[in-house]
Length: 499
Ligand code: ARG
Image 1 (spheres, rainbow, N blue to C red):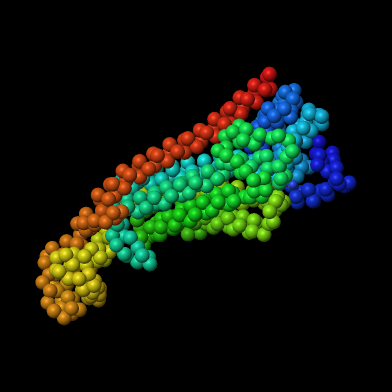
Image 2 (cartoon, rainbow, N blue to C red):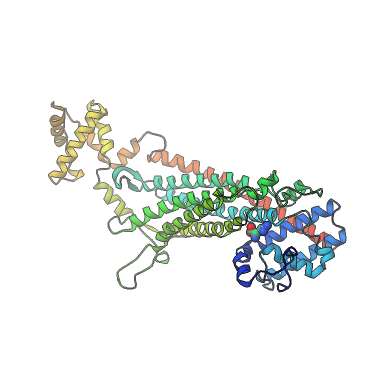
């Protein structure tokens, strides 16, 4: 079939050279949307019939042939190969070969590959975004479960990668949940713009046939139209926006991966990945490497690169369809595949990871990360201004470090000496100020909204569980709408075929 003259090539007297069709063909990357292409065509044909453009007989013949193509594809008898420029040509040529040029030749009435490919991309992206979004929620759920378990496990929070303030692992994990929920919301918002139907845009300026664009959109379960025909065929902002959402999500996964990589070092020793998520060294027998996490970090770079490919691809194009647009598919697929696999791996790595609480407790008990709380304690108990208290504690820390004392050995006398030195006067230090160096005492006293105090962590846990539930319901509705549209279309197609 593919060896005959291409179905679109009447204008030309010679066929494409072998190496040229290989160069121009998008068949391989189109394969991912082959069934979407069939769905879109079926909706188009039904609309053509309803508008009196195709007879019932013609519709039946075309739909049967398309369903045979679907069946053959699923059974591996139809492959995305042959001398076609794309999957659109492959399928149209196949229908024509099966049902004849008189009828099959009507399949493409009122349509162009330009609005067709724009449609296929949106049909596919809709489903794949649903998968990514569902994976985001699954990861958030694992994080929430872990946060619940580690509400009180102390964690030294860093700024400049230096000990900053004391927090808890639960609080850290909740921060990751919040980030993921925003990633979900961004994708939800993007989804609304993906979920619009461009078909009926024609090549770029619509058709003289009375096509019912809203009908196609509703047959395919879209929420609306990409109305303007020029916009419908030329724009890929929905694809780009999805890639941008994924890039941002990957940035977040990468940071989390980086935290866990650091925490897996012998120096930190806070966590240990399960063997199932670790690799070894071919040379150094002692090694246990967090390669899964490192690859999440690495793959984030690939997703960012794909976003950049898309931006560059689009920036110089004039309005209208341009063949360059064919190249949006490989980077888009790469974004989707890498993002989903990273979400899955991160979820498994976290679920199976061991948290070494003793190490986290012992590290924090030797840390000066409660110096902030101590300074606030001095304000409260010794009547100093914050700047004075900051200076006194700073001097005390300097003095303790230079005389080899640990934080546990800090005494009221040392604080009094420090106060005298920096303030030039005696300040009576109450025993009570030293309590601020006790992690559970200070964490309980953190009063601000969103802090790692046990009360706030409990409150946030409860709130995020509700938030997660609400988003899961949103997600279900989204998925069901697509599934229902597919089922209804399938039913309609079957009814026509057997009528
Ligand atoms: N394979 C093309 C793509 O993926 C389909 C549209 C081709 N349109 C055209 N006028 N050559 O973008």
